[in-house]
Length: 186
Length: 186
DNA sequence: ATTTAATATATCGGTCCTATATAGGTTCGA
DNA sequence: TCGAACCTATATAGGACCGATATATTAAAT
Image (cartoon, rainbow over all chains, first blue to last red; front, side, top):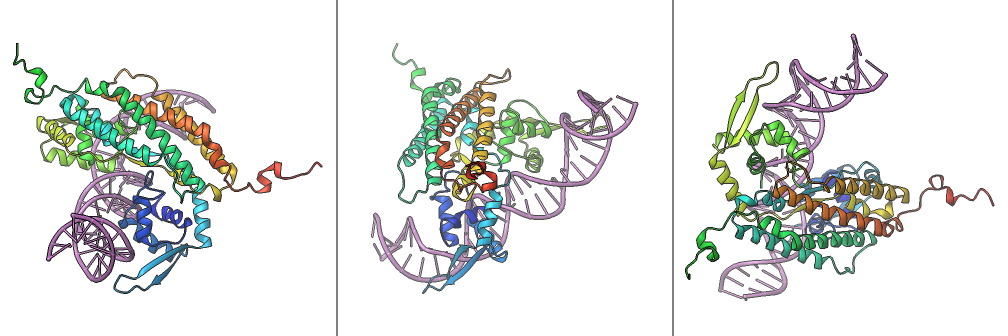
């Protein structure tokens, strides 16, 4: 599923500029499970306009670049519906954290602990962020939000209960980093 | 973190060919949270060889292309360690399923139910796959496996308990698809 | 007074995925 | 026993996409 289709989806929520669509991927309703950047969004909107799946009205602004407001056409809406009837790709998940823990035995224990602490903080922040309903939520975004909340909660629990599994296989800290290893007071 | 670094990680598990590294991403220890394809793996191995981070010994085979067996050098191992001390990118998660449920109101209820059923089947399969320890598991892969199991389990529970939320907002099935809507026997 | 952030469009460079080419081997059911 | 399907193994072309940057102005924060 390419960025053109994602843009059609974005425009179901209402007309928008490329800039606003980008925000939907950065902070908005899509941010937790999709991504797309300017480098793909602007060309996609041009292509969609050429194909008649969206309309583009230029709004002149004083001392700013003209705002190009895109809106879905009926053909565009149907094209999205068609795409949603095709087989969907499986979720793609990419985690540098899990890659790193595979090599915990190559890292000092302090670094492994740091990685877990950072991740726990991120996951807790996400969990909290997804805990409260947003005024603009639709039933669909609400479902996605609750789904995310459930998954991040499970993630936090797992990390808190099992972090010792990787911390215990980490390499020793160098003596100067690990005062416990130095017996200075017999 | 680019494919070169992932290849260094792959070679920590032992020497391997490009073909075998690819399998690690498709079925092996990396498959659940990383991806890379031939189009990036082969060029990456060439680059790593040029930089002296891996060695390449060609093994001639009868009636087959020569096998190129790559192995980590000490500099390569250090390069990986260095990469693991840099800030790690946050997880990236891409879900066409969650994208689709945002537009459940544009789809017939039967399609939404189908999407949920498919996803539940996938998630249950993954959960089961991750439930049992593999003989080749290291502490690191074992941790990742248990992590995945926890997350997929939570996912299955959520879907089973909350699927009605999106099924109830789906569009009506067309009459010919939904016998209950047709009153043929008064 | 100065820097940072926000609004807004656009593109270049490089990375990466998808699909394909090549070429023989093995497995397994019809 | 014959052929289809899949496995081993390397390699690349084409296109999609991300990250960074350029441009230009205003608003807010410091």
